[in-house]
Length: 313
Image 1 (cartoon, rainbow, N blue to C red):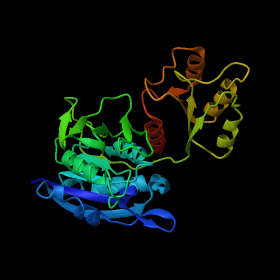
Image 2: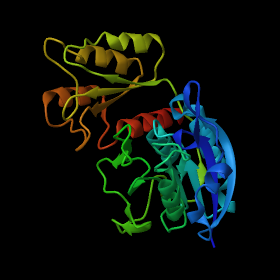
Image 3: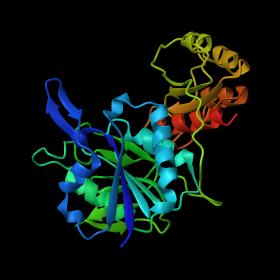
């Protein structure tokens, strides 16, 4: 029987009603008592590392999670992390970067309704997460609704639907059917998988921002980030990516930022099919100045990757 560790971080799954709405209060042990289907599946230990609404999580909390996984990595066959849904995609992407060559399952899960609420999705999600943690998947994944998703490809798509997350630009690793994993790919690898020995690297540069361009947004907005000492910017543009270069020309300001040492990543406001800077002048010219493409990454994954890469410099 496999030995799995549950790391509790809070979120809706752990919430109880209060005078100010739902607040996280239940710890991991209390959650497990409400999922009797886990009996006989595996041996489970619990550790509560925080109990927060995930909207209040910061990069330092990602570091805490990664360090908790690393500290317990050798003692367990897999790890489940219960987490709020609002920023779970960021945390999954962060641990996909920080946990290098992770060959054990690290599975995030949460719920759209508290565990104690009538009709909650929490029971199924926790059961699915532990099912995945007992499987031969390797690396960081997110188990939610009917899907097991690569840790750096998850995105929250719905605020209330039990199918809250989707897998962006990559096929889900597996689909849950009658609490059984139906694998969709032969490579059962989540984020953080690679060659070499397992290690953890939690260095991050947090002076990173996402700048979303609206039609007519002027490039002087970049001056604020330069003045505030930001080291990296993700420019969330239109279509295939790039920046406007007509009467509202972003290129001079982009060049100014690049020359100041700011790393610029061009992303897209489209959800699927990625960035292609070689398609139109708005992308080609930005790339020639030194801007880089986010490729097929979600905004969450692109932002965390930029933080991590700058943290290594």
